[in-house]
Image 1: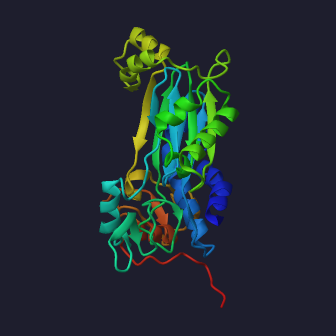
Image 2: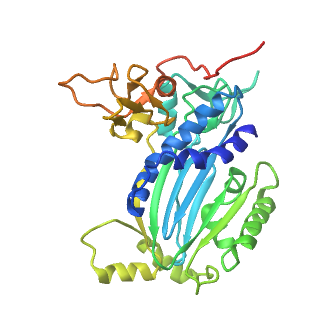
Image 3: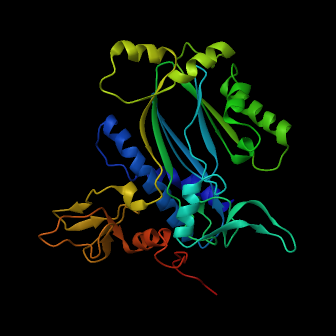
Length: 354
């Protein structure tokens, strides 16, 4: 519980502090996916310093006009229901049972994956990571399990048409009981607040109260569309194949208008790698005037000699060698190495009083 509260109170400020100042709106949206990675990792490091071992999933949504950006770790989920009646996932579930790539990453980093072994019986339940028995491969916190359970989020950014859509953001207690399609269809035609209550009620009716059943519904629609209408089944089937379209400079205005009319969504960005190096890029946070480096994660300025580049050994490049990746302070470099299984999983704690 403490990890969830800490994440709620700190992720937003950690994300915004990682976005450069005095940039245009378009540049701000382009910088957002990287800033979300930084914000999640920084929040996890700060929580580790508290010396607590609880953990939490996180689904973080930023809406800017018609552009929706979603970052998530764990198995809380965000779905998009368009005005055309097509439902799409904006998150990826980081459950070991269902995600082969995540299982391979965890084992490669030093974790063990297996089912609960009851004495005198066969293995039971979902796949878990040992020690700790966590079913997830990504979260914020959970330092007692191991740092191969990483806080690096899957990030997806889409742009809705001017027909808009509805976001349903909910915890795993909802999705264990309802499919994305059932959740979306169950509340169409209702205002957002009532829709959220109905989704929870439907999940409880289907499965009972076995886990957290939190739900938030957000409508992103023009003022002349009070709620998402109920879509006739025949029309719904016709629209499925028209839902997503990749960003293309060759699309004609006529085709674009046609897709917009049925609630098409333009995918702007998607990345789910759990490797921090791949998510931070190669920008150099070096101030030529002061000779000061800024850590790409914790955003703290460091003098030369106090940190390392992400992709190299000694942080300071020779005159003949170009900069290789953003700068990380000592603590954040240790965190990166731990997530990649390069050292033992030891929580970063400033001091312990016995």
